[in-house]
Amino acid sequence: MDYLGKNIRKLGFGLMRLPIIEKEIDLAQTKEMVDLFMAKGSTYFDTAYGYINGKSEEAIKTALVDRYPRESFQLATKLPAWAAATAKDAKEMLHTSLRRTGAGYFDYYLMHNVSESRKKVFDDFGIWDYMLELKEKGLARHIGFSYHDKADLLDRILTEHPETEFVQLQINYADWESESVQSRQCYEVALNHNKPIIIMEPVKGGVLSNPADSVRKIFEEADPKASLASWAIRFAASLDNVITVLSGMSTSQQMKDNLSYMEDFRPLSLEEKAVIVRAREALRAIPSIPCTSCAYCVKGCPQQIHIPVFLDALNRNMIFGDLQGAKRTYQIALMLGSTKPSACIACGNCEDVCPQQIHIIDTLKDAAALSE
Image (cartoon, rainbow, N blue to C red; front, top):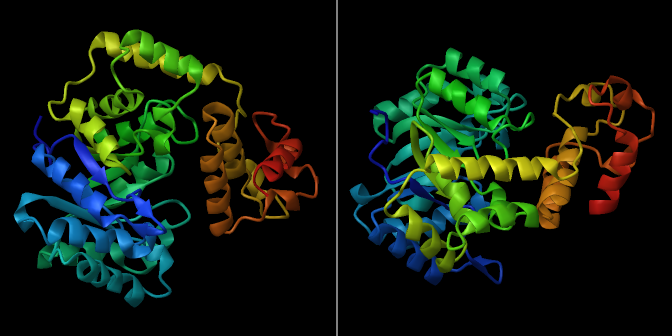
């Protein structure tokens, strides 16, 4: 199959979770990880303007750009226009990223997290045209965007902007049939628009490397020698039209494990795909809150509580035992403007419109108890 980036190795190095020592990036270990990665022929590195408060971009200059020929790797970063006060400030982010990385240009340059709530900023600031200008100037060789939203919006964006060369999507076996994440549906939209895909969150923030016992048992019985993370990453990498699968590695050991099965990548067999299906069914069997993120509850909330996000946080803890991830989700909701769940006044507006008939008032009390 012929598509952009088809010759790039299927394992990409995500630079959001670099090793940290006393609140600073461990540059020695980061260099070791870069060296291991490059030695095995993997060449795609993904960072962003805001990762680790900009220190990720600075670290990759030291660990990669200053130590390897520029044409020997691909470097991607992202522009979060929604974090800027003006269009001028947003466009200046590109030059800040170039200065931090010393890269000269970016092989893949992305608008960061184009979603329903943030799309207007990219439109109003003229970022779509700006991306084309950067490509014409050679500062961005390929342009696209990362995405965490519903499939119908993705279809609309790709219809409006056929100049998009690729999309970066959250895809993993746990979210494949999720009504809130819509991994499969978003993937199929990208295929329908003939857009190659970069996959992020293949291990769902790390939780699929340590899943529930019922899931672990399925994988270990199928192949006791394979790491649990390997099943998740190989699932993503086995999909068609995928440029690379980003793994946010934090240790040299994680790098070695990923390279052990991705150096000579072998797509999942039919038997292995059946194992993935059984694991997904085991996950779905774990009790959870049946929220589909339709957001009907949010529209009528007088306290402006972003209810589905807090229910997602509870599910993250219930299904995966990921308390820290649940608390991060909670904090992200507050950062994006939600009121705390403890502000609920039990008016019942949310429960009146919930298609899943969730007892939202009681559930918000659980969310408050979990993280406040």
